Amino acid sequence: MYDELLKFAVQLAKAAGGIQLAYFRGDRLSIETKSNVYDVVTRADRESEELIAGMIAERYPDHAILGEEGGCRGNAASDWRWVVDPLDGTTNYSQGLPLFTVSIALQYRGETIVGVVYAPYLNELFTATKGGGAYLQYASREPERIRVGEKQTLATSVIASGFPYDKDVNPDNNSDNVARIIPYVRDVRRLGSAAYDISCVAAGLLDGYWELALHEWDVCAAELILAEAGGVVCDLRRDRGISIVAGNGAIVKEILKYVR
Ligand code: IPD
Ligand code: CA
Ligand code: CA
Ligand code: CA
Image (cartoon, rainbow, N blue to C red; front, side, top):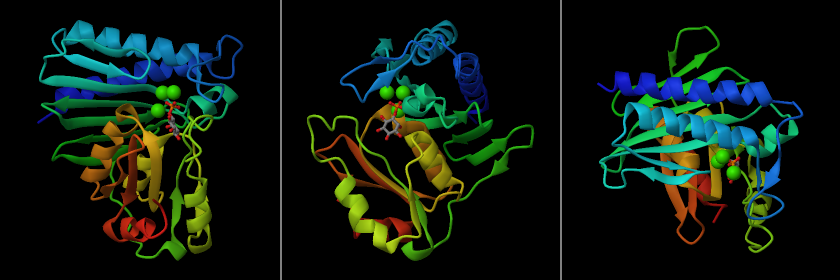
């Protein structure tokens, strides 16, 4: 039903990925900081968002766009809104570490109907449409339908998390949660891209995930991918941006015993 829109969203993600690969590990990254010294942005973040926003404006001039770097653009009154993280995992990217993604969601009247998370260096493409299932395409293989994992206990689970960048002003930085849960899980990962973390939960590559203080652009696309893969997202708290727990129903319950 949303095939054309999905195809276009994939086109956007791949175009941005091309920019990111071109600058990756090069000397023209122009790394700058935003809110504080921990919060970095590069030329690739900005150019990727400009390219994506420009392509959307050309094709759908009446749509609204929310992007991490450029904020709100387009027709704010539109029923259609694109939610874009042009480069999720900038810290990895700026270090030359290969795990970073482009995250693109399209919402209609506030409901996400298309979600794309693309990891250019890894050549992994996670996609979903509302009611149409979730898929992972790796390199030149055919897309395969994905499902969330079935584990029921933390002891056999590998879960991921992350740490907010506002740690200079907010001591509530998630380290207490890590300390509480570590004794009970097989292992914890900090991969560095929230969109990738949640997509990996959707594909059963990770068993669970939680994080505090995220933004819409980090989670919109991946949350649809997870939902279409049979996963669950639960709000952890409301005083710290978007703070969520993700996994299958059983693992979400288990994680909630330790994190807050
Ligand atoms: C960040 C990544 C990271 C998460 C941070 C996000 P950015 O996004 O998703 O994994 O821990 O909270 O801000 O800034 O690299 O797009
Ligand atoms: Ca950022
Ligand atoms: Ca992000
Ligand atoms: Ca970003």
